Image 1 (cartoon, helix red, strand yellow):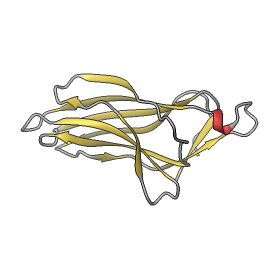
Image 2 (cartoon, rainbow, N blue to C red; image 1 turned 180 degrees about the horizontal axis):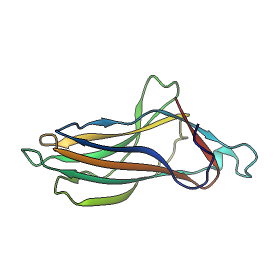
Image 3 (cartoon, helix red, strand yellow; image 1 turned 180 degrees about the vertical axis):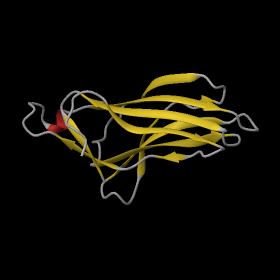
Image 4 (tube, rainbow, N blue to C red; image 1 turned 135 degrees about the vertical axis):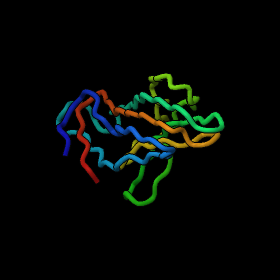
Length: 139
């Protein structure tokens, strides 16, 4: 289990080469902390991604997707990042907030190929942050 924190915690950190996109991050159990003064329904989670894609034969584009699951078996997208081009630039963004939905107990991040051929380098870090304490446990 990762330490309880109100600050950001890393959800996915990966550097892959040779067209290894998509990158699928590990699954984590997201646990709000009891007694932190914020009721679970009022706890807000945000995701921040830093991406760098480079290379590929036909102008690849990549995207970060945050997925959720109620049972750690069936996964569905809960937030999508901006589609980024493969120009070796480093882009940081806040993945759009999850609205009109409670965050499921299991979360993970992944990158997907949004177009073209797979990039030869994908360097991705995704953080999860909240307005109250929480912990991430390996699922």
